[in-house]
Length: 317
Image (cartoon, rainbow, N blue to C red; front, side, top):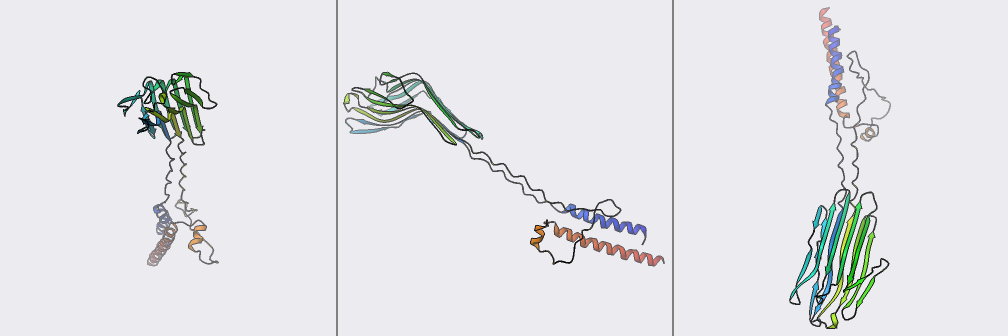
């Protein structure tokens, strides 16, 4: 065989599987990250759930009022200082007036927080035009829920508190009862906080009200009043995305004189032909048909080179 012919055949045989294997696509579907759920937060300065009875209960008016109630996801803030109720006793009732009344709720991927701040507040109900149901110097509530940490709830009532015109000393150990003859009764719960594994809630003051001035049945008020409340729920921690799997590369071995480091794979012919399942178990992949096709191409190229060499040799002789 002519040496140039042999070298051309060897180059063709060695380069064919390299080009073929380079053309085999690698399939690796990227993992889709799973995001966590959003946290939640809320805050409210004032919430009332009162029933007002007028003229010996001949007229029933629900007194359901909120001031500066905000909720998140996202961020929200309100700072209104007064809330009025129309249509009771023929004239508006100034339910609450304050120097400071702030409610704020924020949520991001790691933390949810609710916060309220109330200062120099006076609350009135129908039938008590000249007398405040309650006066508060300062009250705050805060609820913070952060991923990886225990939720925290805190509320404080600072300075003096007056109920139905009487200065009272509040106790965290249980409700404080205030009774004013000829006016009514009020029960106060001070600084209530509740936390769970993922939630927190704080309330500065909660009042249970039963008011009937001089028992004239002109305006009887019953129900509850909540001051400075904040809640939160911890955002769920995002799941870590899985790393994409790298496809197995076909093994390469030492070849001919071209330096391409390629060698034909061999195997035993004593056993039955492997099934598709066996290929999967022993590392077979979607590149197997391409490798088989490459082997057939190598045989065809080698056979053609041999025939060409013999013809040239016989012609020379």
